[in-house]
Image (cartoon, rainbow, N blue to C red; front, side):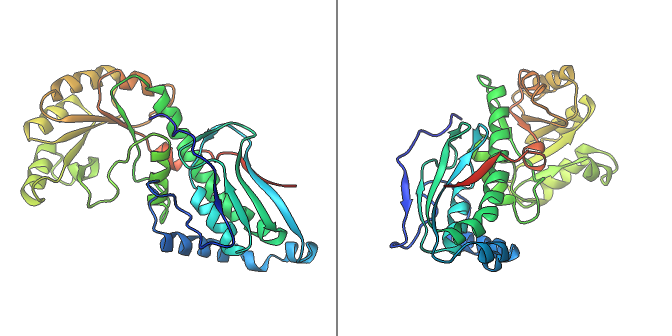
Length: 305
């Protein structure tokens, strides 16, 4: 997915009830849930008791500041940053120059803020913590998507997310052009190696039991690490295969076996150096846990004039 087209700047003004989330943005939290999350983060940081700022900056001091990118990347988390600044200081005015899902270059201004200096300084870290992590995920995802450009394959995430951050992390993956795997354990059946081990080591038994117990239409996917397991899972009527840590020749063989029977997903140790070779084997999806558990934060900063 290409980065979103540029949109005109929008403003969050002190005179209006703020709406932090643009219509149609796909942001996963409602306004009340967003506000509660950001309030909790501000409370955790004791942002309303910032002894450094209170003791050094006079109350009437106004300032202008820009939240800028110091490195190129893909953005995610703008609504959270907006809420952090406005919840701490309702008199701040914010111009949003770049929205989530957009590509930025080093030096680009994302937000331009005007208002009481104390509020800008005390909300800075919370705003950056949200945006740097989520933009890091979006940026890494975009790099994987670009690496398989032109091939008919989806880059998807996993459930390897910090507790409480799943919806935001998966949103950031979408901002980077990726797709989401199942959100939680109720979304689909994914029979992994430990499930198979608990079914006498027989993937066909596990698939048959799942088919007999889950509602019709619920996806049944089986993780396989050998061609023998793949043959057994296909014979048992599995809907999808998760080809785990297989060699490229084995992946190609399994894709041929699955043709017309089920779709395929490759996973396990995927890197930017290996992802295109895996995609060229013909799999439908490639799942990458590193998108959410190992993405480096995007370098962003608040610069006060």
